[in-house]
Length: 195
Image (tube, rainbow, N blue to C red; front, side, top):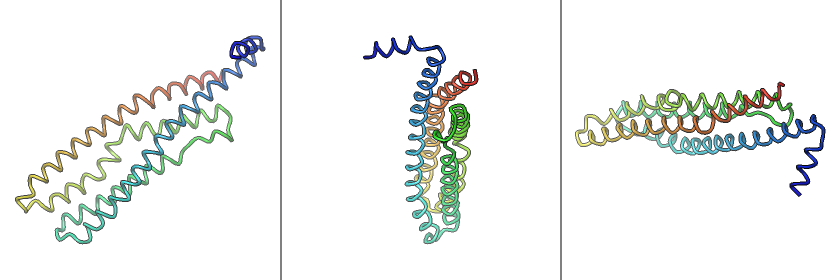
């Protein structure tokens, strides 16, 4: 069956072969992009669930805790998490519509969306980590006058720094492994389509 299809394809006019090749390339690209979008959606779900836990917990701490620095820090953490969720949702809304556009328009939009997602992952320290750090530091400083808590404060700060380094390198790895090759493929496909 496969040999017969190859013979039919080879015997068809060159224009039809090119159309078939473009269609196959587009299907491969759509499949590849769908995996990226699915991964982004799972990340958004994880972060939303984490936010659904963090926001009430730190709101409760801000409301009930006796130390002013801890209260201020908790409020800043809640605001930082809300900012992170809005940032992720704004990136998620920009998906290419593969039904209403031509192949070339779809590729331009896909390149734009992948570029935005890549930039977000490249800059994760600035928009994901830094908004919550001041709140965390202030919250922990609220306990500094209790000598027994100093070890725990240092442990919390050092583990947060270690997690930040891990998040940074994990996102850089994801960009290198997933986004850069797909962006290169999209650029190649755009070049082919424009010719």
